[in-house]
Image 1 (cartoon, rainbow, N blue to C red):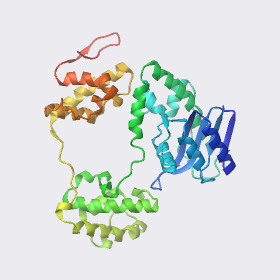
Image 2 (image 1 turned 90 degrees about the vertical axis):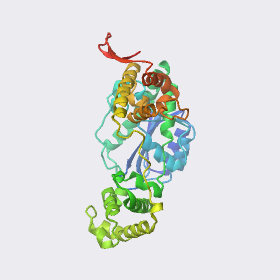
Image 3 (image 1 turned 45 degrees about the horizontal axis):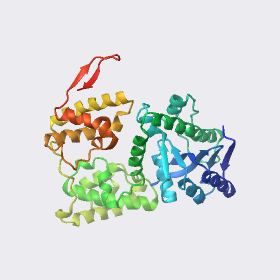
Image 4 (image 1 turned 180 degrees about the vertical axis):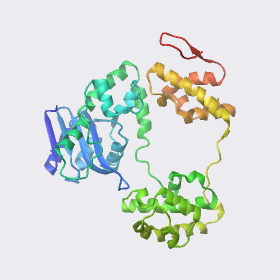
Length: 396
């Protein structure tokens, strides 16, 4: 238990928390937010803990948290668990990410705890501490907060610094500190990615089924939805569900009444979106065919059963190597990576210098990539061998 607990609901309390953060070498951090009704996450609670203190900051009571955000990004190692959304909120609020980030879920994946272990399970496995639960699906925007909500929120940061110390020591002992740093930087690079309206069509469910004019209509309709969702700060699906966009793209309706008749739109939505959606359709229909969007050409050897067979063999090699090293397999290579290697083999491009498969770069290449290349080139065989732990895959 910390020496000092603060529930910051006034500017002076927030200033005190900011000062404590600024004086910390390491800071445990978590957020509670809602994202069901808004385009961006709606921050409802910020929890932090440092040496000797823990605090809850209420952004609904004090909206100006600039000093807190500046303190967070200004120096301490920020320790999170599965922190992509937390970091996204920090980036939006502070304009930059913390100087140093340690994600305990990422670290756990390099120490045999699986690639997506939950906070409570990791605390239990690594520290032997039970974690109190029960408020994970609460509405964090409602006030006042209950005592149980406050206890739950503090529990989410209470053990993070102990986890950080324990996992850091284990990573150093096993020589994997740089591996985690590399993976963390790779993930940080995706934080705050902006969806350009003209590219929003690529993210619509079932868009891959469309071609030609329908894809042109989808591009215009999805671009309008993206801009409007940002303007209204509402979720894309709340404004116009993907399934409705697909129907609009297929039918290309030019009358607002046709939009209103589509399944998946209630009357209030139809009244809001029918006219601008029809205008989007008309813009698409006015474009010459040369300007219609197109999906990239099919990848080489698409549908070739050899790709699946080779990738499945390599998957066994990667999983076996990951088990030997007590790593989550996905950290070494994804199914997509392995299928790409199979296509490169069939195309005679394994030795191409510009290859960008992660498995063949950095620490992954040493850990498993070189072994996979030997299998692909016929320089090593894969077999089932016996050992003290029972049958296992062996490459040699």
